[in-house]
Image 1 (cartoon, helix red, strand yellow):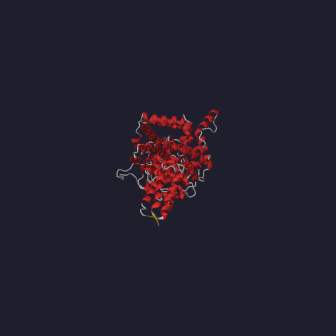
Image 2 (tube, one colour):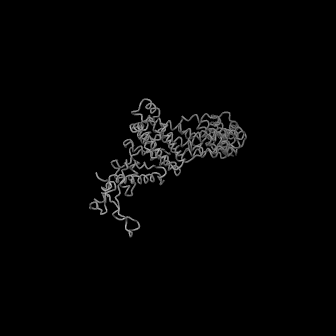
Image 3 (cartoon, chains in turn green, red):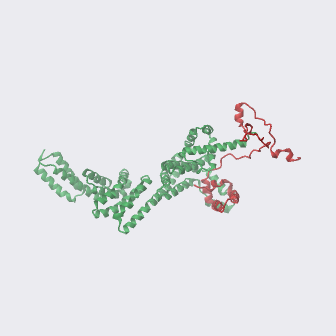
Length: 420
Length: 128
């Protein structure tokens, strides 16, 4: 029985099926392709065979070395690749992302970014997607009504990346309530739009459009994750239980912060809510409870403070963040740490009234503590330092209650001690 | 992403008629009512909503595999002798690829048992 061309084609299809599975297992960290890749995905390898170095890579993979094939697929210049291969890659990397999300949301996000890059490349090329659309909707040679209906249903090529952005947003939103790994991967990918656009060589307007859409949807997903905490806190507030239950409810924001990879929106939310609970505890003079409330959120306060210090455009969040450091300074018992926290509050928001008051107060305490150590002798440089501390305290908050006492004490020390 | 084009091996480029024809055939072969309902749902999804059809097409792998040809015509075989090996296969049942034969420097083997396939059998075909 002779070996026919059809037999050769069939054999090649079978080889391609096994190679795409091997490639998938390699890209998706060993995940089996069977459940996520349809048989038609083998067409990816059929397209790779047509590339100049594709046949050699496929031959090597058939001989057991899939490395050249994986490298070729991974390093392919999307802008120059055949669009049909890029279409395969967009879906292949999307399937890899889904397979990876439980084991490693970060790796899944990278796969999503590769998929998004492929969609960007297809959108830039335009002709392939336009042709596909024409074939699917049948608008080309159709009559008026049908053509009009096709036009209504059309997805312009430039919107193709936004379709994946919408899919990612859906996944992020679905995972927001239970902070799922898949949602986290999608959220991470939505934050890496620029990277995908760069890989694809997408035009700046295309990148800008996708980034704006991704940011909007990303924020919505984060809001969904926070909404459940916000609702619980509001209910506690209505029942007058904010001081007693607030901390426990707000603690749920810590995993949300991790889930969002330390997103700034979570920090704003926490600062806003801690402020409300914190004042209740402050007014009740519940210092231990206030200390306990603040402790789990310190990394968030530090993070937000750093953002404000780095970027002056964050000025609108400065006062709220400074108040957190004021609270921290108020409950801190160790004087140098207390001073550092009060200094940070004033650094973040130089006009913050409470920050200036607390810092002035701490400076007075520090000055008086130094003067109490001067029993018989007082070093001149130490007296000068104490004087400088009080001058600064006065410049920060002239009405600080400890200031007059501290000034009086300094005058007594200057008169009564032997300066050396 | 569960895609009806991939689930039912439909080519989005072939249009609504081909989708309908293929899904109709699948529905007729469906094992139970639930499966038939799923097929109907897919048909509605793909044919009644062009925008959804296009979106599903975007998220379906394009068909770029080589076309499947006709299956080979198997020649008739004499009944196997009673003392034949249990597996029922012999060396002559294996077809070597042309590239292998070329590497070995041998011509394509001739088979004593080779007889024309049924459709080419002059007896069955009758007079021209």
